[in-house]
Image 1 (cartoon, rainbow, N blue to C red):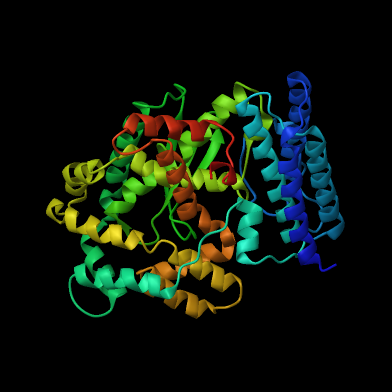
Image 2 (image 1 turned 120 degrees about the vertical axis):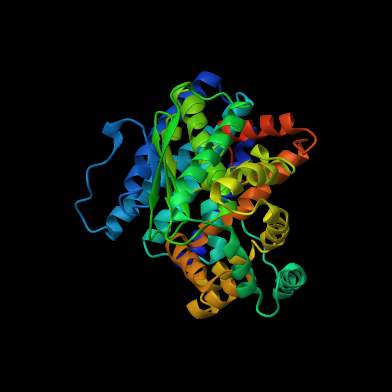
Length: 443
């Protein structure tokens, strides 16, 4: 059998087994004991997989003795990969035999979460062993979701709307970049503006979500990274937030980064999982965060949707106009027009996914991909190149930001978390941050 097709068939078969097991039952104590053992083996397994890909483990704050010794052999060793694959299959088989972990709703979520994480681990082993997946196959295997695809005509219609509202005439990306030049924060003022933004995000979050008294973060400014910002969670309720200043920082990105990486985004998400599931319930699978897994779609989706949760309605533009624009030395009178245009540009979000799909599937060259990102992502050549660097490094991970946000948005708003019910929205949002969730489970 073709190796690639064999792997895809395995994923489909595994999903069928997973859903067929939902009627099996066992005593709560027996299930918990077995689940805890599987969870411990899962943590040790993914730490070993992480030896073959330095980006695989995003955070680990579990028992130090579980971390494997430094890899002594060639990372491409096929025998080691085969052993890892067999370990993953063994854990999946144990879960199949265990059946649905449904003593209560939270434990059922735990079972589904761990099963999907293991499927993603198997996919990653397949990939580091040299296996090839298409963009959509990879995103389904790793992140439990597939991004929709839009036609060029769809994006062009939005570009036409931009043409009507952007100052000037001619090339849309250049006009947008020229327009944005009035909204750049100078390096000398960036730290003050950013710290003001993250303090406001924190204040708003703490009005609705209780966090441990020792939770804290540190901010660093870095350059020459493929990402715009990153949260490195260190455990014990502490995060290192890095902001990439290689390219100019626009005023709108300050709230985006502060909310996404900090409050109520990644920092709060990791703090709550560590507190509620790892420390209080002893679920050791939440002592490790595997980057290439369904958990990342939940993490990125909640972090992006969390911006709206923290700043509902027109409260964001009001805060920026009254506080951040003056701090940055920018003209508050231009805020309304700026966000009118940004709202249109946001509708082009999926253009990046379509670019990544065609590029990684070998349908477009790097130059064609760059040109698409400039035209339909309305971005500068420098930022398009940074996006391609990200795609080269993280592949289908790009879907987690926009598709993740849309999945989280749909889940929360379908359950009543609308603008007119902000407290309900916060309650649902905190529930997603505090419980084991999977993308397919939110649909």
